[in-house]
Length: 182
Figure 1 (tube, rainbow, N blue to C red):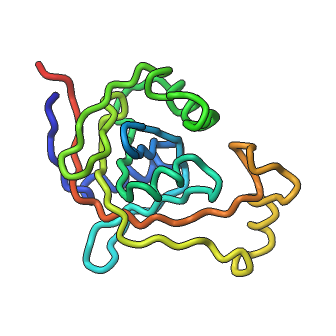
Figure 2 (figure 1 turned 180 degrees about the vertical axis):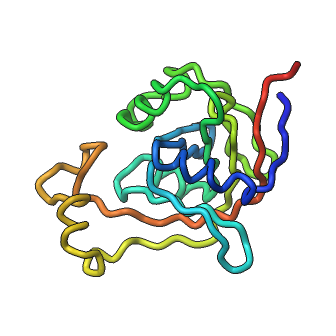
Figure 3 (figure 1 turned 45 degrees about the vertical axis):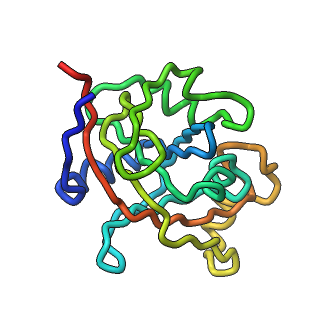
């Protein structure tokens, strides 16, 4: 594998355009690597550091993983890729299946974190959680609350449910594009 180091802000437009369509948030706790599709996230500067903030619903397996290991990678499509990766990763739980194995994904060791990159979505942000906060449901406007947090949908529904999000502020400690060796 070849990793071409990048400056995150030089790729900000590509990163945020990809987030709208879906990127992977990958975690690792013990020997278990899990990935999930996210389409909510922010990229910015806070405390003088480059930060990617990811939002994870409170009953997700990914949140359990982040409690055990507060590191993650954001894996972003860059060029052509199999859209099935985002579909499976966004509808199935790592609690029940090994998504990495099921999708035949290629893991690439992280450089600064214990969580791997995914070669098939090669633009990678390695992140360490520097802050996290649960959303305050009383502070969310009613129209957003009713659209994104319907109380009549069970927590097991992966698309829309009553679970609120926890925001994970990940300091970007390394960023690169993975490509196969020549």
